[in-house]
Image (cartoon, rainbow, N blue to C red; front, side, top):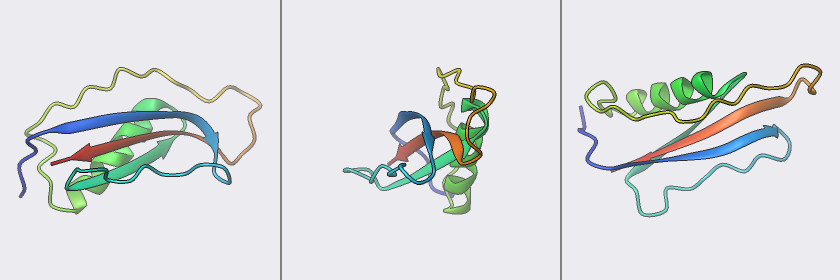
Length: 87
């Protein structure tokens, strides 16, 4: 597994699937965007994708300072998006 030496978390907020544009790696070795009904689910989704790419996400504590939740009555294609870039 690859050890994470540096990371960056990007909060994309609440957006619809049709208008969301994912973040690029921008100088980082890898990156993943997660989505969910709230920020914790989106962060978990992003970290699972990084783990599938052989990053050791268990050895690094990447804080999630965001507490977003989709408001009731939002369109079905609305999600919270969070990207995590690593090197």
